[in-house]
View 1 (cartoon, rainbow, N blue to C red):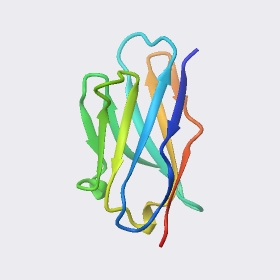
View 2: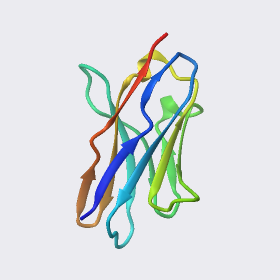
View 3: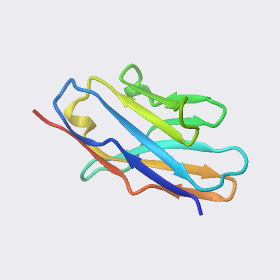
View 4: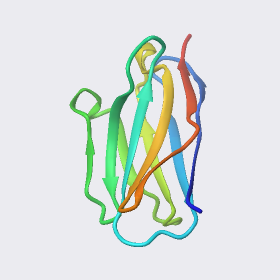
Length: 116
């Protein structure tokens, strides 16, 4: 059974950095897409960044230059989201989504709070 687990969230001051990880367990066949979303209080869930198993990656325009998504070179089952120069409006629960041919798998989310 495929499972998705996020980690790396926490409390950070404005201007700080965090690295979130999305670890996938279970057997995966075929191509896949990993997408990071976030949901701030009283707001809709929004797409943050996306990467394929072949390394094709994109970050949503407002976040480019501050956020980077990558396949972890040491662990092929892990995708990292590096976030720098964090701002208060980055505060949200960050979710990882794995899209396989058979369907979608969501993690439970990890809280990121940016506060001084």
